Image (tube, rainbow, N blue to C red; front, side, top):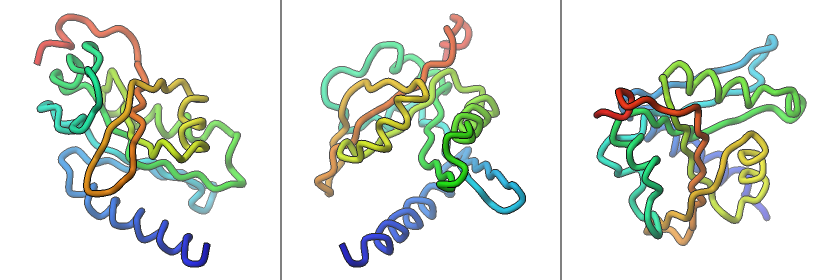
Length: 157
């Protein structure tokens, strides 16, 4: 489809421009020696607004971890095609989550984007349901990556 790549780039830049203003925004880059990948995100707000539009009941552990401030949203992950299958995406996501002491990673992916959903799921992410966000028609798949069992102190907001 003509212009598809341009629209994709414009959408990415629009999301990135909006996200960099979120509290706690972080971006990691990987170079070898040129830029070969990046990942970015921010802490999920404790008020649960990240999950607005979630259909059904949010899993209790996800709700508790969100309220505790220990959930980090990975909003973007880009890896050059020549660097894929080298574990770079795993290392970037692990570093972002570790740096922010997250007990749960979270992301929202257009459910029709099968390659992205499969990529996250192949790295241990699990689907917990669907999120509907107007005004667009897109239905997003909510994926989470648990990172160990939280202690009672870690769940106390």
